[in-house]
Length: 116
Image (cartoon, rainbow, N blue to C red; front, side):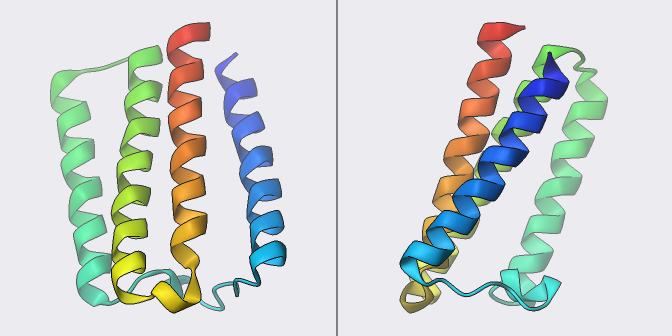
């Protein structure tokens, strides 16, 4: 069941990304580092990932709670990214895509809690 939720979320994210980029004329990132505002933003996300992995490994979560926390963590990352993009790159409108990814991650976390 978890595989189908993850698979459906990837399909929904792909369709949503293509639709929003085409409809709102938002450019794609040419390089991997283009999605970050600066090196500080990149390092901040790496620190958050390390803290999340440390917290998960020390508390020993498993099963649906692990997957739910993973999607909630991704939604927090996308909210932070959207806020930074909204503040510094408002004219490029990339924050709209980040907010949409946040909604998909929250829906996946809710689906995992309700369906598993």
